[in-house]
Image (tube, rainbow, N blue to C red; front, side, top):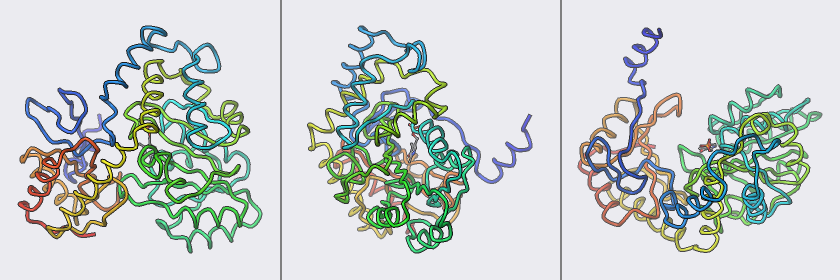
Length: 382
Ligand SMILES: *Cc1c(COP(=O)(O)O)cnc(C)c1O
């Protein structure tokens, strides 16, 4: 089955396979018996293996066991889920928050539920696949605006004077590392009475005071903003949340199918998120370190002629003209002991090698990365 489809993918260099680490997640990982410097992880602060996070998970396992046993609407939730939700609401400065099982589940469950009825969703063309799928699952009209193009968004919004509007955007775009122009999006939402669905998967723990892209811009959440985010990236854990007004949360637990019809997260996972969140608040040094490592990597890469924008986020795309070129760079790095994956369609339109820097990389790791790319001797293009 699917032989033809698979060989078609292989021919186009688009066939994907899996990679199994033989070590824990971290700046250096072991794969098939060899060590690689890992620039392929979203564990931006190194919290996935932080001893306090691991200990919190162990303790919760001993107290509450592992599996939750049922959905939150039945007997699956416990005081840990509630504690995490209180922390998130405080952290995100909202009335309430609700934990979802994953970012994918939040985007495909609640976004359609918010758009129920006659809404129209305005979605950035580079939004994460789970937002795209959330749009598909809704029966709302969907208008795609050009990436970060506020003129285009304004024009599309103007054309829908009567309908209820939701603007959906990544806070930090996951494959490009750039940030949504939220002050402008805010003005447009206010002008048109639109709601904002903000996916802060890559901004939570990273931007502003750690609480994400709103704080990066000094913006306060309004009753019409819904901040979604994950525990699976900078927080080194798993699961996701939605933070907003208590009406939104009540509506979510009464209508978001991915919340209603799925077993609650295991307690050790929730306890790990609680600990990670408290570390993000208590230890701003981790974020400073991430930022300085990001700057070091960007400066190093610019120094050898790579066209990278010194960004505020640890996602550094090295755009390549073709899939083959992206694979060639990635496999050269692999042979040099560096894991930086090629990202291909359909994940992105323009193939690239995506580098993610973390707070736990050392100067040497970053130097070796830059040195290997210099040796590869290819000038990347934006
Ligand atoms: C990773 C990611 C998600 C999905 O989150 P998971 O918890 O991994 O399912 C959603 N949105 C964006 C922007 C992401 O980068």
